[in-house]
Amino acid sequence: MQPATDDPKATPFWQSALGLVGWIVLCFTAAGVGSSFTMPQIETWYAELEKPFFNPPNWVFGPVWSVLYLMMAVAVWLVWKNAGWVNAPHSLGMWCFQLLLNTTWSVLFFGLESPVLAAVEITVLWISILITTIAFWRHDRLAAILMMPYLAWVSYAAALNYTIAALN
Image: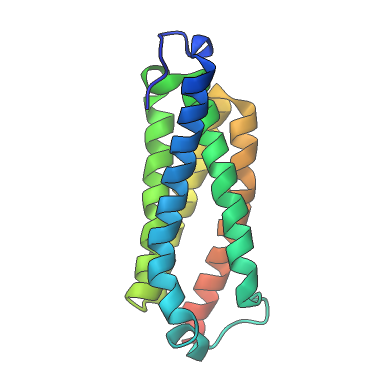
């Protein structure tokens, strides 16, 4: 995905809209891959784990993650639209890396049934989201702001993950 000209603000509307759709599809594809490891484990392995008092009901995760993935897609689209790959390769590359880590967490926690490995990985994920958010700030402040709820939720998820690893 590359804006049409060297001046990203001159990108035709149709190309910008298509870019947004592309980023949304990428986010929700990653979500789908992660979910394919998560969903089969919810009623079996995950149900048997000892969980902390601050663990939310299972139904909370889907809506929260759906909103966060949409916000992540809009955030990366804003940076792509306003700066492009030429002017923001590090920022866009970091965003792609954190999305890969996001998906990998589900594989480790649910797929491999390893809260300990997932706890190590979520630390790296959190750092990569922070770096991405800071990098986005330089290109588009709204994009960085859109990443902040994701960083907050992953902070909460990390606390859950660390506690589950300790309890089990």
